[in-house]
Amino acid sequence: MEIWINPACSKCRSAVRLLDAEGADYTVRRYLEDVPGEDEIRDVLRRLGLEPWDITRTRETAAEELGLEEWPRDAGARDRWIKALAEHPELIQRPIITADDGTAVVARTDEAVRDALSR
Image (cartoon, rainbow, N blue to C red; front, side, top):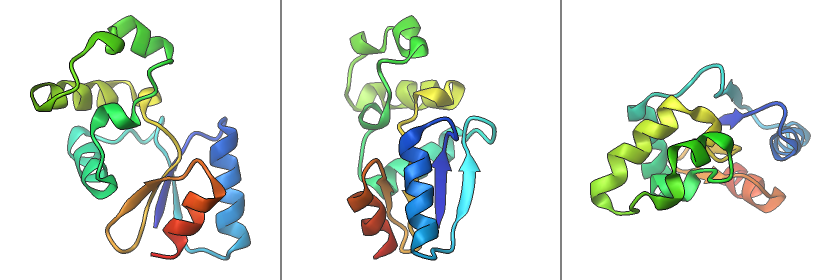
């Protein structure tokens, strides 16, 4: 499994601690440095079963500068949202764990991390 983290994020650090405590085999991806491309974001969205606006941190400065609150949230705007996430990775909700079974979870709680471990 892989976990997308921002080391400055307390939820990310908590998720990594829990993975370590459970003896999980995982790879850390610092997604602000190793930025996912549009195709990777599409894949993670498919695995999550979510839309790009569902994993967008709309309170970030970049979101406000882009005016994301005003963007449509429909199929026609999907690619625009994905492009924004690829160009501004700080907008991606964190942490995200991609599980070995091909699914993914936004792992902001211990329960979500355990869910990823059970897959």
